Image (cartoon, rainbow, N blue to C red):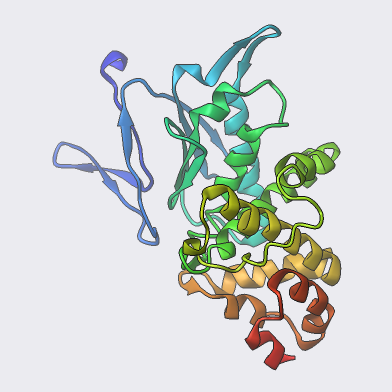
Length: 292
């Protein structure tokens, strides 16, 4: 009965197997995670294209505040569903029938193929407003279904290829669903940590070149988001998103490289983005310089 039910949070398809139920892992998964726990509560929603979004939470996902209970589970499910649909429209269809978000009992968040974790800290800190890390980290991890899972990269040597894109994807989610909070996102997520004149040239560095996590996030995630925003200004919004879509298509199912990312710009676009690339990369990427 329900009291004995154990929820299994894992990607893939369930199918009958030897008198029980088997789980078929997605064939395109880079890394698959599995979590089961009797104390998890399951919440579901569906995108317009029929993808089932599942959220597994602890009891503390609903927070008692002076203004009454705040349902972080409902909010996380909503923004996960919205962002999955939005990124599908922008970057290409999400290729699976299910997407899973699990409240994690560790800091921050973690991405896997078709399954992500969002820290219990962000659920407990939910105040009823989209201004906070529950929204930010949830949509960040959803974005990794494109920038990490669909389009692979070497996360040790070129972490910016997924983390900068996932971070900037947070901004475009706010731009679409909470446009009044666009400036708040820049202040809270980026400018609080790195001033306008922040000039750490390690944006394209490997993870091994940083002494601590904060330095790494500042240089790769946050300065990377600034670079992408400036590239968008250089190219224009339509051309910028066309570029990201072409990168998502060209890199699908493979380990993409910075060479691939930059090679999808035309010679004219390379010239228009030269100043930005010099500002953020120290100098244009060698293959870009030769291409122009």
